[in-house]
Image 1 (cartoon, rainbow, N blue to C red):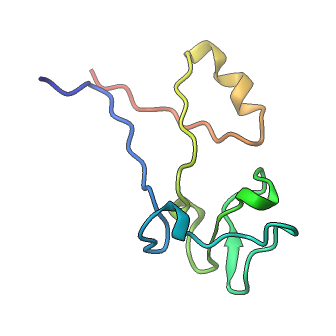
Image 2: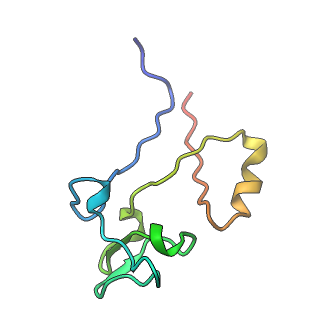
Length: 92
């Protein structure tokens, strides 16, 4: 079976966590990350916020949702601060 021409790849876990449940989380009531860490996103609520070491780039945060949308709908997602739109390069 041949691989598709476009692949989506994502880093599953941040900071060496063994699995998603081991990731550092913000306080579920306040949304504040533990000292020495920072939020991966301001668009998540307090009980779903993941935190990473302050020395890490936000690109080290795990991907929690992945959508593919038609090109004519990307503006809708670009205007929504809870999404980051990344265009997949077209190879051809």
